[in-house]
Length: 428
Ligand code: GDD
Ligand code: GTP
Image (cartoon, rainbow, N blue to C red):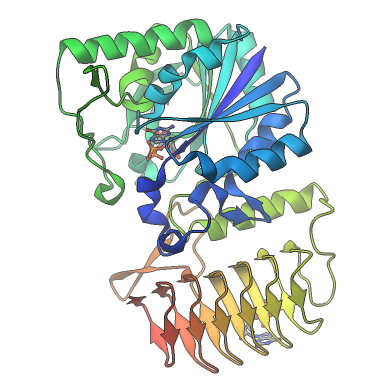
């Protein structure tokens, strides 16, 4: 049998999801894109693999965060057991797996999937299983090609093109080694991964070292202190990427499945806009009943929550999600955007490449707009007149934009009132 683990991390890592995460009734994995929480897209992929009966969400958020989500999932998929396993502190991507190994190993599964919750992709899990069997593998990693200049923001894979064997793996290398990168989706044989983690832990204990990790993104990195747990034992963070994957590459039974399908990371709030577009397009291709019916004013794909109110003269799409109880007035134009719960867009306003936060209000004839980012681009900032600006305009919770005001390439923290035009600013 096969199980699945979805890694969700914890609240301290929400910094890049500002300003939406600043005022969270919801946490990042529960942020909705294309009408569903980010994590539900991962869970849905797992449910499509018939042999998976048990799914664990592993992280260090409070227990209460995923309670309702899990209840909903158990109701929709009664054949699958889904549970949240909470780390008492951040244990790292491999540390969490190891800590909960008894739960994962129960019932003796031969293998299990590990999914980073903060990625958006088509999750070709069945193909990974097939490659696993074909190669009699110990591990499969999902890889994708990205433009050379973004590759070093990710884990980089050097593979043998013919055998698909992973020859080298380097997490966020200093300089270019490959444009085939780690998508954050793995399939591991249970009988090799836990011994690998164990020996990495032992190595670590024998050779004390810094617990900080090199990273190209200082913003997102927290320096994790070495802490003593209740038993007075040294507990340390163990990461799959830095501590385990390069060893697996030496074992020679580690293979990569390269996906040609879409893949994006969802780290920043702005990246929710391209993720929304990708999942909507996927739903559209699959002729999902959930999407709004195309018409003169609905350019597909568009998701409108059943409780939202959209004036029939408003023109929506492509790639628009309208959240619960949102109100969209007459003559409004929205494209490439997410409008969250209880937001109100008054008549003739225009929303492009933007996220409108919970309960925000956009006035009549106002414009809230960002700049399109190239599809292949793995970043949501653009350079304008030599300055890096946010390409997606984001209004945090309960912001107000006055009538006829234009907000362009801005990030606006919660509860702000915008009464005059603003461009390329962070409004605090
Ligand atoms: N349970 C748990 N405990 N989960 C964690 C922890 C932890 O201590 N730390 C991170 N995570 C979760 C995050 O929520 C995310 O889903 C995943 O593990 C990886 O997060 P990071 O450790 O922040 O790595 P990253 O996102 O910068 O890079 C990883 O993902 C890229 C693809 O998106 C790496 O695997 C890269 O190689 C990869 O390219
Ligand atoms: P298409 O790309 O074929 O849809 O044509 P287009 O680019 O001329 O128009 P689109 O509907 O894509 O909207 C682009 C711009 O037109 C926006 O910047 C809006 O300012 C403006 N616009 C179009 N329709 C409306 C509308 O019904 N109301 C408002 N307020 N603005 C609109």
